Length: 208
Ligand SMILES: Cc1cc2nc3c(=O)[nH]c(=O)nc-3n(C[C@H](O)[C@H](O)[C@H](O)COP(=O)(O)O)c2cc1C
Image: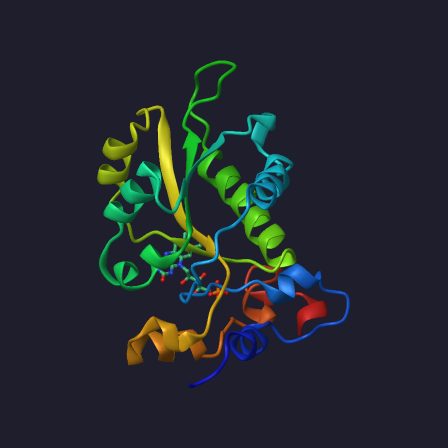
């Protein structure tokens, strides 16, 4: 055994900064998921959190297709996975496809913020999941055409990310050295002074 699930979870947490929301601190993207199913009461809470995301013109353009293991939707989402994601994501007990309505429902004009708003709602799911002891892992590595066709997603909707959801398990369960190494690798981030400016390129005083 390399590390236990709990040890990896501790290792992956962002450095503790006083006053940061616990879920922000705890959220990370796992690859090792246990078989444990996610109960429907929990799923409902995750989407309740998503429902309260802000959106341009309060359009709420997001829609989520939820595949629970053993269902046709889960099978279809598994079939759409690409490349490296095929090595771990099929084990996740829940796969969620996020899509966004491309045009405003009020006037039919293009909503340039549709995917942006879907992203905001998706992050609320990830944070609510972290708060409830679950892990989420978004993926862009899936065949959108396949997912659209297999799941009859109308052309009016743009596909966003596919998200794995479940309970994290021991990294050894991944069964491959490469996956295990990734699972236990430290998380990295750019420093704040590369990201937050008071004038273009000039780090704000509070991040210097
Ligand atoms: C839109 C999007 C697409 C992503 N696509 C993939 C993917 O296809 N495969 C994968 O393993 N991780 C994917 N990720 C996960 C990122 O690699 C991960 O969020 C990033 O490395 C930061 O790690 P953290 O989530 O643990 O903080 C994606 C994340 C996002 C937001």
